[in-house]
Amino acid sequence: MGVSQAINFQTEGQKAATTGDFVLTANKVNPVVRTLKEYGIAVTALRSHMLTETPRLFFMHFWAVDNPDKLAYGLRKALGLTNTIM
Image 1 (tube, rainbow, N blue to C red):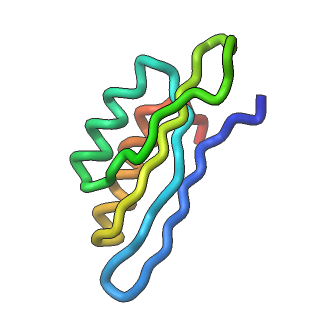
Image 2 (image 1 turned 120 degrees about the vertical axis):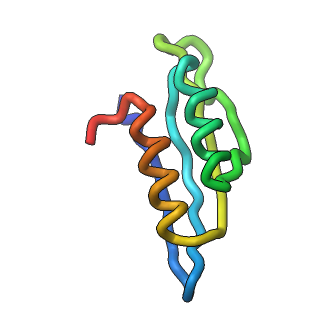
Image 3 (image 1 turned 180 degrees about the horizontal axis):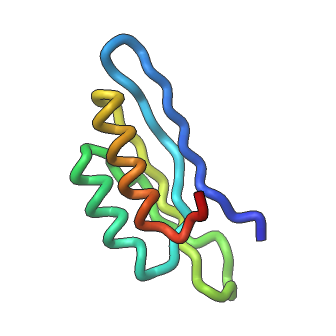
């Protein structure tokens, strides 16, 4: 299907900005939300782009500005909760 995760990360001095999205099945949505929030990463949107796909997929968009190490660790932890093959 060509479904992938998108993570953008840019440092500036002592801070970093991150934005992107995860593609998740329903059972992964709440654990990923909790993990992102734990590391100060805001979920900005949760939506479905398709009508009848199986399994049902949700696109979770996120954004944050904070310490680069904290953000990277939080994103890695959230990514580990997905079905992504690394």
